[in-house]
Length: 381
Image 1: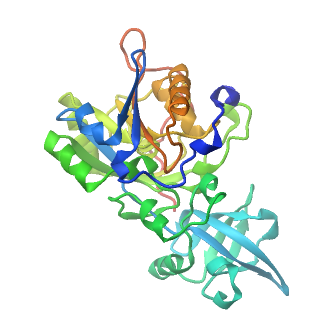
Image 2 (image 1 turned 90 degrees about the vertical axis):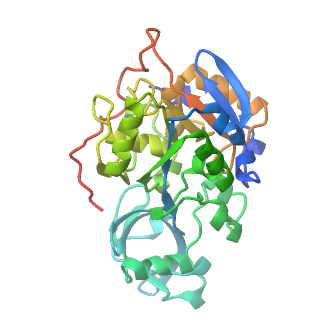
Image 3 (image 1 turned 60 degrees about the vertical axis):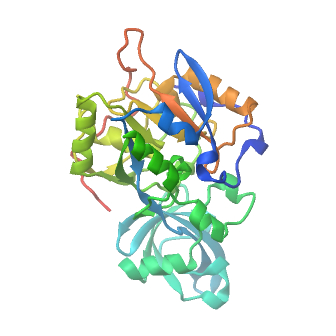
């Protein structure tokens, strides 16, 4: 499909630089294909669901994956930045380097707070491999838990570019850019739909008899990369590591069997569920890398509803929500959101999307947007 089909104009003032307070006070646009739009708030979620429904959350935890340092090549030095996006070994990370042209295989990089020379030696790495598009494989001098501790000491929260270009990260972001249920370290971007949940909202969902289950997908920095191709078939997704446990798969299969609805909280949860789904829609325990790319025509197997934030024009995430609820429906929903001053992107407001159906009442079906999930893929990092 042409990428320009997913373009739209967004006023810059609609980009949220801080989250709503409290988190569940954010607006939420309910989108029912063929029925219309409804303005609600996240706090209304319990009244929109019913007992037996299951919310599926991504429990990944954001790490301080934005590093600033000094590249050393003989006597020559240069300031560089690295955004870690996938761990390949206890001491190795794939990273997007900026400027990419300043690093080459064999270079040494000394990371510290903002590249200040007084921190040199605090966290050192070697460029093991140089890839395309500024990507590099970094081999750190520290490994495992020692490397994790150093990242927390010298790293910055990797705010999305549309926020980072307007302000620096601060201590407040360390809490704001993290879900209250985050527990599995490894993400370099937050599963932002989950940022809206509070302990009070969880309590009200519990009282309504709405279950919650957790999966893990370590969101990579590739989620922020623009789609530069003119056609979706020419775009390459970066892989992300995830897992669906046996207990979660069994619980979701049981919920579907008794008529409960599956609500994916965030596009990351949905992509992982689709990666773990069998052809008949049941879920199997699964772990590994997924680069599933969902565009209109994709046959969804799992979620009945999707709670998600408002996404970038021409992005893979806007393509995904257009596949879920229909392109025309989502273009109308986004136009409504802009006109009614909804806040966009990671710290912005939410939407609750119902899955589109075909005219005969069967779930939305058609062309697969990328390769179907491969269940024989093994964890490689």
